[in-house]
Image 1 (cartoon, rainbow, N blue to C red):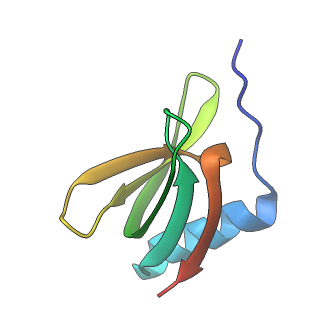
Image 2: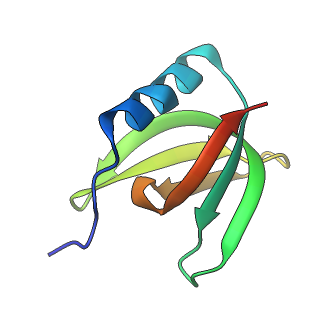
Length: 78
């Protein structure tokens, strides 16, 4: 069983809008190691895997990043 906690629907919708408009987001999230990372990301898609939702994004170096939605602490358009 997954420990995933769904995010609020408004935040989910904000991510969808950012994806549709190609907006870059300053994003803060917890890594698997429990460390906080803050980076500008370009969100590409939202997907579901093993009963959890994920954000697929590009970092500023062009690498793909996948972040579980309930680990995102904040995001703001740049």
